[in-house]
Image 1 (cartoon, rainbow, N blue to C red):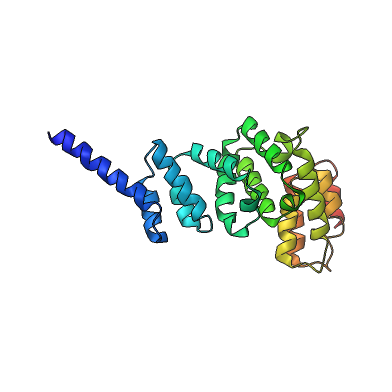
Image 2: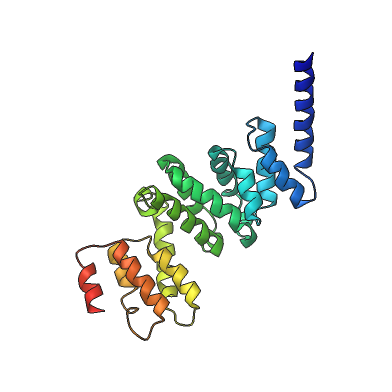
Length: 238
């Protein structure tokens, strides 16, 4: 019958898409990711994860592969957090940023607690890698869109020490005039994981004319975004 023939044709196309998911051409894999985007069967999900991992450095293919389901982001992030070698490779940062941002927006406390524990259990040399910094910044960005932040969700959990560790390193970097302005601005974003007192302490020497204008502006924005009773006097004294 026509219905049976249509089902056979659909199955044939699906099987061909699964085969092409391992094609050598990035363009072909991109088209396959788009075509499989509305499929929820196990084989399609596995193929999409495979494409995302293989093309982790290509943000467009990553977005196409992960556009089908938010659950896919959480599942893949949990996978790669158990792979120190994957996390140590800066080429994988586009994928990690996408996974972390979406996971942060979802704001699932148990899921985020698990992510924090996995990160904290990584070898020290991996925890301190720039890739992890990028992942944490993306998580924080996603969470702030939903009105939360890592320091709240990871308070009194094993991951709290990871945040403290990163903030301390960033505090040194943001005050290091030998670093580029771009590096210092990124460090300031990490310092902003902390509370108003932490930010104020780390930036106490940065609101002076001897500092680049970009640094001074970013410090003012960071202080204004996380205020307490001492913020206004600090800004007025600058």
